[in-house]
Image (cartoon, rainbow, N blue to C red; front, side, top):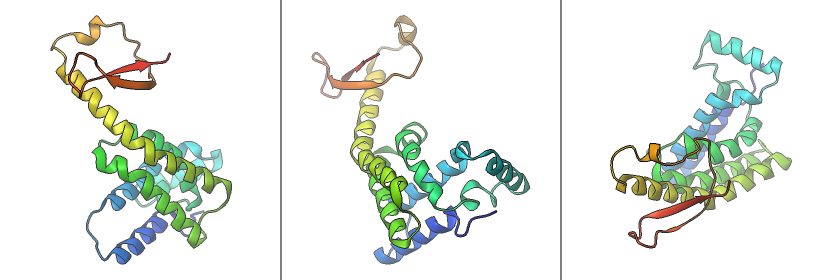
Length: 196
């Protein structure tokens, strides 16, 4: 059964109200973040479905992929469970949006969550958890974007050739716990350390 309103309808309502209140309709950072959130849900939220929901969603999707997407099938409470993965994974690993996206994602999602609560679309512990993720992202995403830029600059400044093959690198994902300027390098170079 299709929810009423759907995620897509709620997100459109949010953007329409915000566009009206700011008297502008151009392609804004807010609109970009909301569209990315919807895209994330349409691409990855299926993992959270029960077997019955997954079967229903698959049948709808096979009938019309776009018209029956995740965000056009499920209701706004499903947004709450995707806020963490959206901010902690999707924005970092799937979006090449630069500083504007990194700086806007947390605040825009927080604004959306507050608006959803005011409209009665969300409440309870799931809402608070989503808010906590948005607050953390407000601080962490700009830092992650800056670190990414520094790491890119560092790798670009390395000599050409088989640099990676010469280093003992484990190709699993690593967590960078600290970065600091390289003592003998330029201020834009960094050294990253992994606590493995």
